[in-house]
Amino acid sequence: MSADFLLVDNEPAVLELSSKIAALEACDFISLDTEFLRVVTYYPKLCLAQLCIDGTTYLADPVKTDIRRVIEALLFTKATVLVFSGSEDIEILADLAREYQLSRLSPENCIDIQTMCGFAEKSTAFSLRSCVKEFLEIELEKSETRSDWSQRPLTREQLEYSVLDVFYLKDLYDCLMQDISPVKLSWLKSEMQEILLRYSSRPSLDEAYLNIAGAGTLNEKELKRLKFLCSRRLEFAVGHDEALNRIITTSALCSIAREKPQNSHDLAECHMKWGAIRQYGTMVLDWVKQADRQPDEAVRLPYDYFSSKGEYKDAYRRLKHLVESCCVKAGISPELLKQKRLLNDYFYALHYGAAPKLLSSWRQEVIGAISFERLMSSGS
Image 1 (cartoon, rainbow, N blue to C red):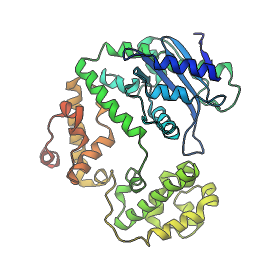
Image 2 (spheres, helix red, strand yellow):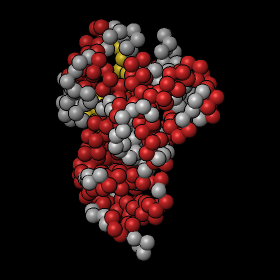
Image 3 (tube, rainbow, N blue to C red):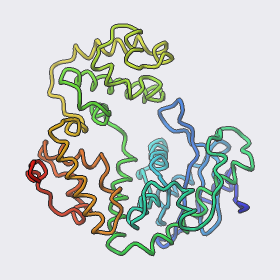
Image 4 (tube, rainbow, N blue to C red):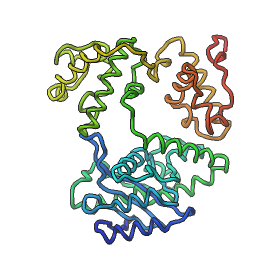
């Protein structure tokens, strides 16, 4: 395919595109993708925004011109915004909305085609390329995947590649809609509202440790240390716009919390990278010391606490099997609900007297009731 597009790299073009978006109605669609850099920074740096409207693709260039009006129009549009694996696109829009002091962090109506696949009883692991090939029988080029999108001018190959990321989203939507009933569509829309909220929210300093893999294996003192380390790491990353893993790789956090390193060699033994040790080692060692001087407090368990306990192994297996069976019966992909995040939350929420996500919103219609006692019973 020869990819046609319109460059939006000057103020008149920005005004024209933003006006076009503002005029769209609820029956209209905008396909969206972004190209960005996030190798060394905490915040993603937007390099290009691709929007396809009625078959015309617009490439909005924030490096060459101010595209605030386009972003604002996109956030407040009545149209449905289509994305593919769009968590980072949602995050970028939310960050820009905060920077521009806008009252809305994400579009009101947004559909992630990858998520939509699950409600059409397809795999949610499809890449865009495999999705287009599977449903539209079109082979996409992926030669520019690792391009430097901050360079200017962008090459013709880069521009054409960026167009393909949005050009087929509406066709995929139309194709998948053939397999989605009104009930499943309502489930999809409900799920999308939760996704928009999850990825447009900023992480809390006090809760930064909860999602760290392996945290459930730590004892109370080590967990307290991990909480302090994660809080300081996030605070530093946000304040200095530094990528989290350039300070301490996430995989090293539990080792540092457990081993309580005293010097650079100890940090390396905990799998902290030498480049980070040279730059931040002294600071991290100071954080370790500070952590043990913090006042005693009850530390909330991490999300993977129960999955790390052997006595819950069979219960997890039963829960996963139950979820899979319910999804098959409902005609949706089990991948939507057998996520580790949701399985962990079931036991976690019950422990703290809350309603598990598996038993709330649209998911309760699919799962129904779950007997905790039966899950835990060795005779099940």
